[in-house]
Image (cartoon, rainbow, N blue to C red):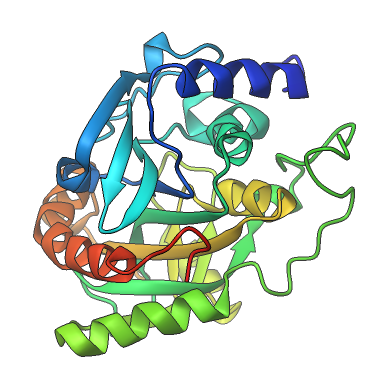
Length: 286
């Protein structure tokens, strides 16, 4: 795959900026089944991914493949209605190009959402888990979006990840959840490459290593956002229970339809949390 250069990112960002008067400071990425949140954006400008230079099209059901710019709460936002994934055949750099474009558009805060399998026993379908840390199995195996020559104008060669997910944003989200009497927990998200769901042995391994939920996205975006100096917040919508023992009933096996249905149930709660978080957002993200 050819490298994602500063010129490519700039061409992408310029194309988006020319089509919207919005000046977004917050970027949102909506995972499987969560695209309906885009309907709450006020005065939206909608751009299909297929029209944006260098963007990769999403091939997964539940990912509409549209960029939406406008206002959510009091924040100017750029919102991805669906993402592309490593398992679709794209490189780690390709799937994170939109985050790079957000950086050049002036975004300083990125909110990542996803559908994930619950490993911790209390994480049932429809639960919401704020991500406080992650385990990057794909990156450990070499599929890291920061691999290759570093462009110092985009970020440092060796970015620190001890605070990958901004603790102040997490506390603000929990304050909103308490005010709304919404149930929100926190935990560690593990990324595997997919597209298959995990084997029982893999689930037991993940639990032993400290993972609370598992999915197939989000971590590369968090890495690139932090590399670019942006604050990151992540929320997992628990779509299924990760199976940790052999089952012979096909009805108990996780499937993508289950993921989408759990998303439809969780979207109203997540939408209220995010709009509550952004309700008094100012230009500095405070």
